[in-house]
Amino acid sequence: MKHRVLAPIVGILCFLGAWELLVQLNDVRPFVLRAPSRVVDNLFSYPGTYAEAAWVTLQHAYFGAALGLAGALLLAAPMAASRFVEHAVHPVLTLVQVTPFVAYIASVVLWLGPGTRPAVFIVGLVCLPAFAFAAVDGMRSADPAARELLASVDASRWEVLWRLRLPSALPSLFTSARYNVGLALIAAYLVEGGNYANEGLGAIGKKAALFPSTRDAADALWAAIFAMAILGTVTLLVLSVAQRALMRWHVSQRPQLR
Image 1 (cartoon, helix red, strand yellow):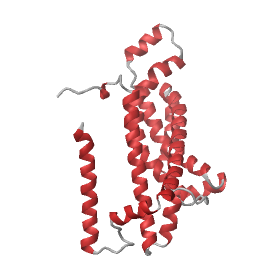
Image 2: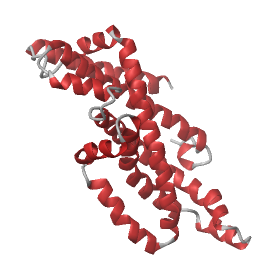
Image 3: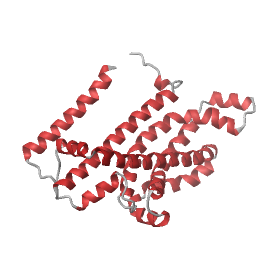
Image 4: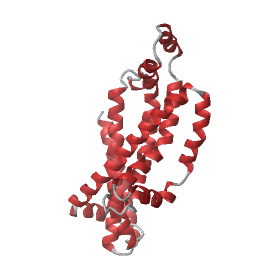
């Protein structure tokens, strides 16, 4: 247990130490790369500003991901039950997944207005395909013997979905959630830079990017990046705890024999 806590800390400290030495020894210009010590100093100099912005970004990412998950489950249930529905919906999800969402951020902001709504909508949209594909595969992987048992007692489709298909989809949904963490945070950050609300880490990064050659702007930009990394790390830890709590019954969460 100690190694599981100590090893990541050592790894991060070694990475930041190497980064610090690279910048200091090579006299890298501030607008090219900032030293971690300067970035951390900027974070601690304005803790309220970054904490408030991080809270806004976190809400955009979490609510958007929850919206994407809800939409994915609504699509996945009929897709898992019908090959025709799957073949009809699959190409649409693929188009959503491969289309660069940055290209239509401005259109969504004009459509939904400034502020939270476009951020949550785009986060939900970019998270939807991965959740849907994972949910379909997970629902289809339900134990055949359990399906036969439920059919033998004349279980309704809702009971089969709730008692069998959704639990079977949990492992793949948690895997896709880890993938979507980065997508959700990136989407929230980019929309915040163009939703005219001046809120969130994306707004700080957008302002700083306008004047990258100034020392204060470079510090603010990298501080926003560090804050995003912290949010992503915390979210992944929360997902790990939630997975252990919700999937104690699954073989992947049981102690492995060596």
